[in-house]
Every structure is written in structure tokens, then in C-alpha cells.
Length: 497
Image 1 (cartoon, rainbow, N blue to C red):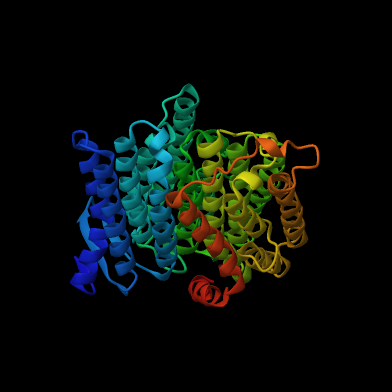
Image 2: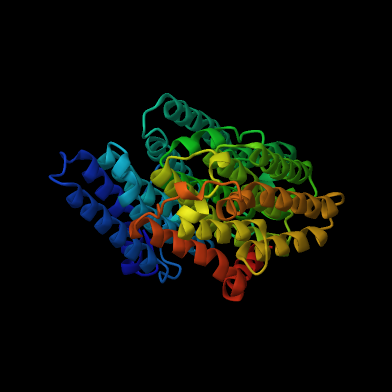
């Protein structure tokens, strides 16, 4: 069954299927005759997928039901304004990190396997963004986990294998919480199709509200696993540091956002925000989010390994988004969706900066970064601009999203959280400055007793530098010119609140 234009529906399916099939072909093919042929094939796959993904943005309200697994269990794709935001950030970052990988993966083995799974995961993420109901979302959510695990354990070291297994175990536990919710929704919802305002059947839910509150809480927890929310966050600082740097960047910038998107779809498009407003579920959700914000920042501040520090930072920053969503307030939700976009570009830039340092110098510890700005000035300037954006220094992008989050909290009427939220966000911002900026300061100002004679230029080539520059610029420019994106997000918020 096709809704709207057949051509638009075909483009949507092509954007999903092409990278999955193309990546599978790369995996199944015998070894390429040269590395250049492999990179040529991967580059073609990335660019074609990117073009198809961007073409879907003009699909209007087109949709397509591929097949049905039973009553209300349809595999159904449809584009909406929320999906458009995620498609844009996924496409930009996935392509940039992919081309960055051309140089970075030179010192890694099994490149064919890496790029095959990388392309397949690209297609699955686009499928999540285009999913029209919770059944489709769940199917590709599980597929995303299975296809991204090889990116984590790529090096096959003991740490990578343990990180990959931990990622898989936590992700499956979260997915089963979501699956439990799907069972109940199938019984108590009029439809499983994502609908602004929710789909619960009033007659069937009457008298069963307490059970359904438990169900929605477990679904939030389940998707919160991927988003690194306490107490199911421990996989993230274990898995992200052991993956190759470009894989870490998309894991931290994009794949974790699948959990955020799942929470949005569950709360605002299935149960409806009015169902949990003022209940213990909202209180517990806000509490867990703020605990995660503070805990992640503190652990990042204490961590000495650079990529692990950035992973703990992701734990904290994602719960900025979850807290904004939990407030169930327009300004806060606007801030949360803005932070989805800004954090994706910022954290990808930071992980790619860390990867460039590792690739050129082999340094992984923060204490070993003294003088690195003299050796890799372009890389560290990109790192610095992204850091300022994450801290929330105006006019960089992070300031805009955090402003809306704080304004939303102050206007939310949520009791203690009205003032506690902004306080925790401010403390977290100070901690963020404390764990990001020392690398810049020591990198450019190593001190009078530093051996300047040992310095040598180590800047990576353009395959790595250009993606870094683009992401760093986006991190700043989107803060200088935020109005178009903010107005677009407001239109989304207005449909669900």
C-alpha cells in the first residue's frame, strides 16, 4: 500500500535498501584488487546514499507499507518533519566520517569488513528515521544494534571484544523492555502508527492507567539504554573508546540518538504527553536524567583517557536532551531537539579530533597532550571550537540549546525541577569546561619548561582535516544563525504539545 506519490515512496525505499545491499555486497565480495578500488566503491556508496537520503526530504507525506506481520503489525515507512531533522544530521555526519575513515583506517586491518558494516548501518539509521510505526522502528532498532556491534569490536583486542559484548548485552536488555511495551500497545492503542498526541484508546485504557504507566516507564528506560541514561549507561564509556575513531564519532553522535528518537516517538507519538504529565513517571524520568547529567560530567572530569572522557561526556550531554523532553514543555522540547542537532556535530568533531591525534602521534592520555596544539594546530583549533560549543559559550551552538532548556525548566511548573534543572545544567557546563579546555590550554601554551625542540608538524591530510573543519564550523555557525532551525523545530513541537 502506498500513500501519496509512488515516486516518493520508491525514493524512500531506495535510500534504505541501497546502502544495506551495497554494504552486504562489499562484505561478500572477495578481496578487492587494490585499496583504491575498495575506497572508490565505498565512496560511491556513501555519495549515492546521501543523494537518495536528501531526495527523501521532499517526499511530503508519502508513505509505503511493505507487508504485514499480523493485525496492526505492519512494516510501514512514512516521512514527517521530525524524521527530516534526523535524516539531515545522519547523512552529513555519516558521509564526513566515512571519508575521514579513508585515511584513518590505513592503520587498521579488515577494512572491507569495517566499510561493509558502516554502509549497512547507514541504511538502517535512515530506516529508523523513516519508520512510520513502532513495529518498524523496533525491527530496525534491533538491526542497528547487530550491525553496529562489529564497528565496536573491529580491532578484535580483548578490550574491543568485551566492549562489543557489553554493548550488545545492554542494548538487547533495553530492546526487550521496549518489546514488552509493544505488546501492551498492541492491546491498548487504536493504532501503532506514530501519531502526534498519542494513539491510546480511551475506553480500553480506562482503569488500566497504573499498568500503562509502568509500561511507558520501561519503554523510556529501554530506549534510554541506547541514550546512556543512568542506570543503564555503563556500556557507553566501555564501547566507544575501543572502536576506531570514526566509528566512535558516529556511535556517539548518531547511533545513541536512536534511543532519543525512540523516546520521543514513545512519549509524544504513542502514549501522548498528557498521559504521563504530573505522574511518577515524569518525576522519575526527570530525576534519572539529572543524575546522569551530573554523573557523566563528573566522571568525564576525572577521566584521563581522552576517548573515554569524551564517551562520559556523551552520557551527560544526552541526558540534557532527555531532561528537556521529560519536562513536557514547549521551550524545553525545542531546546532538546536543538541539542540533538548541535551535539551530533559537536561530538563527532571532538571524536574525530581525538582520532587525528591518535593516528598521528599515538597519544591517548590527556596528560600527554602538552604541546599538541603546536604540532597539530588545525586539529586542535577544530577541537577548541567544538569544545566551546559543547560548553555553551555564546555564540556557539550549545549556548542556544541550553538557553531553551533552562527557560523551559523555569517555565515548566515541575516543582523542585523548575530550579534544580538549570542549576545542574550550569554545574555540568562548568565541569565540561574543566575537562575539555585544559587540552587546548596545554596544547597551545605548554609552558616555559617545555622542550620546544622536540616538536614536529603532524597535521593529518585533507581526508581527515576537511571533515573536521566542516563539523567544527557547523558547531559554531548554527549558533550564530539559529533562527531557521529553531523555527522549524517549533513547528514540530507545536504539533505534539
